[in-house]
Length: 113
Image (cartoon, rainbow, N blue to C red):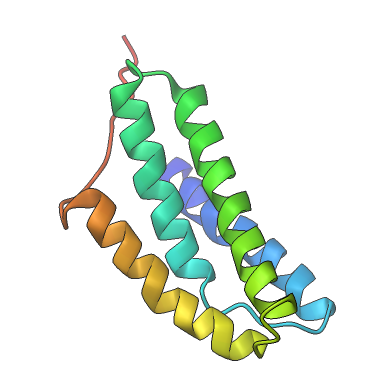
């Protein structure tokens, strides 16, 4: 039950944010790749910070905010259609996650010791 709840939490949070975007009349196709970049950065920050979970969480939230602002700036000031901009972001953020991780899995395990 806990594993199912943890998996559903990530999808649920992404769904809530996507719902707000759709209600506002937009569409964000790149949300999955954004989550991928945020998770890679979170894992890298967590492992380099001496196992501090708050650092990893803050890094993921910060990256998510920066990517969202970047998408917004491209759409508003670049006058690019949101579907096209986020479709390009989908590929770009997936590539960014691959570059940051050198194509290797990034992760960490909390010890309950």
